[in-house]
Length: 421
Image (cartoon, rainbow, N blue to C red; front, side, top):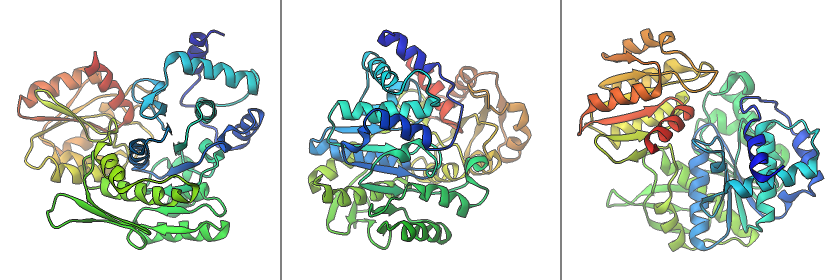
């Protein structure tokens, strides 16, 4: 196939097809001579915050001058977003070329899903580009997720809450066990501060496999400085004052702390970050769809909160970052999400809510949750498309209002594409 044909073939694989397990990816990587062994890596799992943590770590490494491979999911607008080197997404031409190369290695009769094939492409691409270090975000869970086939030098687990219960379990302990599946012998794990029952599960698994544990609040922490604006990182080996974050929201201090702890531990592999580059990296970090503010009249804020934990963090951010603002909420959600806690967290903070379906076969139709929405918000309107919901919200918000888009990363991606065009 030509590169354009190969790219078209890849993007047409069913993206919603989930088959947990590592055998298929392990066999594919072995056929490619295990490219994932050619560079040190940070591997991050968690329910919320793992993408932001990856973004913080990659930005600091980039500021230091390293050639950094960043693999994340899902993408918002283009699949190229998943494969970045030093902040630049892969081009269509190179992505098509990499797809061809992987197909040549694994054979046309492979049984890889879209996510599995993309993971193999990412790990292969980073090896071909001879990166210095990779930052890898887990897709779903951890124990049976394709990215777990990587060979990390450091692992991390961010905030865990209820999500993907049909695959990961129906309790926090069960979900924590699945996330802890990324742990490996003699590879340190960094854990974000969270409920004791979650930490207990992860520490037990770490002890079983022989992974040293570093826990936020015990071994490292972000602490506010006296000026009330900056932070100091109190680490295991270093102290970094005068920190500010490029990502908004009080929850981001935990993600930044986990990122810096990972970078400290990466020094054992010869990857070192100076205090100045850590400082500039955190301040320069950008991550689309996470309290991403698009200036205009009115301002539009995009946030991919799509589960109860994410909605709670977003609600707290609204109370701190956007206190006093009249929020016009454009909201869409997938049917397999626990939407009621999300509604209860976000809708009381909205002046009006504009419900829309999401561009996915798994969408929850507005008619299915409009009655629940009306319990938490006085003004609720339903629309047939994100475009119509956004137009109504912008018109009602006026120049001084705030339009917030939340509930689904699919919805955030659709709105980003609409606004870009």
